[in-house]
Image (cartoon, rainbow, N blue to C red):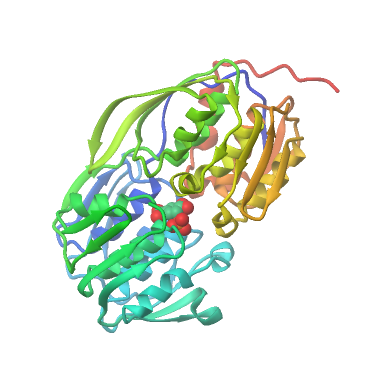
Amino acid sequence: MIEIRPQEGIVGEIKVPGDKSISHRAALLGSLSREGIEVENFSPGEDCASTLSCLRTMGCEVNRDAVSGKVSVKAPDGLKEPSDVLDAGNSGTTARLILGLISGIPNIFAVITGDESLKRRPMGRVAKPLVVMGAKIDGREFGEKLPLAVRGRKLTGGVHTLQVASAQVKTAILFAGLRAQGATTVIEPTLTRDHTEIMLEHLGIPIFRKGLKVTVYPASTLKGASWTIPGDFSAAAFWIVAAAITEKSELQIKKVNVNPTRTGLLRVLQRMGLDYNIEDEILSGGERMATITVRSSSLKGTKVMPEEIPSMIDELPVLAVAATQAEGTTEIRDAGELRVKESDRIHAMTEGLKRMGAQIEELQDGWIIKGKTKLSGARLKSFGDHRIAMALTVAGLAADDSVILEGESCVHISYPSFFEDLKALTARSQPKERVSS
Ligand code: S3P
């Protein structure tokens, strides 16, 4: 457990870890390349380590320099039948994207599993369209839950209209489409993160996009490439809210990904009154990377629109924290997907913030939060979920007494140095006077 002490402000500059979604995709696509893909600033989290370990089990050459964060992946003789069960750990992205990557390799046999949390999460949303393409997949609960067994077969493309807005499902189908016969098209209900599309374009794979529709053609091998992965906006989000809701903050977040399909949080916070600016934007591997500066802000409540949800799906827990510090009512709906993430994030945040005295109402698909509330210190649980641990830590920074957080080690999933970074960013600010009761 860890004690989080209230702070006057978040001051200085920071570089957050490499983007998790982009890191998974770069490593997985490296498996289609003889020369290999080499990236700097690969995500240091356990989720991406799970992807690398599964790739090794399938015969890929994976090299990782722990100091520089450089990772290279290549498969000189293509992906091989795994010599053991593929363990995706806590990572939904690993399990779902690998399903798409391998379903179309004729005769390959693989079993994919994960930890207790991942074994509870829905997999049918990926398995079903792959089965329609010709894949042979089965598993617990008629293919809905891990472990899943895959026997690779020849796939056929086609048009897939998704029921859920999910970049993981979209990517799994596009990856399968690279080995399928004919064109594979995905039509999304709302635009989700488009890192796969950007990376395939960057790697010279023919891909066509128009609005919510994306089409790939067969391309089972890629040429080599190298680039630097930008910082993870979902990691930056915790510091953006921390700086906004504490009184004397001025924070620069360097070289962070500002792909608009990820930065919905910034647009919603801007509407709420966030004092920020973005500068020094450049492209890296086709992705936008910039410096975001955030200052203490007077926030007011807002209504989050359904079409905004996918661009901030992982940031909703920390937006809930910001909403407790905003004047008026914030309404977040159409976010039922949060119930099937690493934990039930709607319930986890309701419980944590309620314990701190927030006025938060739990809805089936989101929250109604009334502010501004002075949060109090409390003993909180992470529910083993990295984003809950970091969001509640941010709430603790704006509280009037210490938060004791249990189960904080799960931050290793995406952001192993989170608490060290917190220490560095709060070293120059005064811990706030405790309010005696
Ligand atoms: C991700 C997509 C999102 C997100 C997850 C990473 C990705 O999941 O929540 O953290 O890398 O494609 P869904 O596709 O399930 O919405």
